[in-house]
Length: 141
Image (cartoon, rainbow, N blue to C red):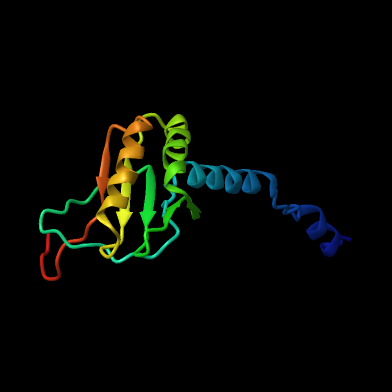
C-alpha cells in the first residue's frame, strides 16, 4: 500500500531564504550612497543677501564665511573673531587645497568687515574668493 502523505513529505523541497547576500547588498548600497553624496555646507546663520543682476550660480563652494547685519562673523556654524578668519581658512584649505571661499554677507553689514574677511581669506592662501549675492526678483536665468 502506498502512503501518499509520506511521499508528499519526501518530495517537498525545503524552502529557505538566505539573508546574508541580501544584507551584504544593502550595506554595499549604503556605502555607495554615502560616498557619492555631496553634503551642503552652510554658514550657520540666516542672512539677507544683496541683489546683483550679474550674479552667477557657483557650483561648488568649499568654505563659507558668514557676516551678519551686526557684523558678527561665522564659520562652520560658530561665531569667530575677525582675527581668526585667516587661521580657520588656512585649516579649511589644508583639508582641500583646491577649495574656494564664498563670503555670505548680509546687505546691512558694513563693507569694511566684508573686505577684512576677504583680506583674511586671501592672506590664508585662498585663490578663489567670492561674495554671495542673489538675482533680482523676476530675473530668470
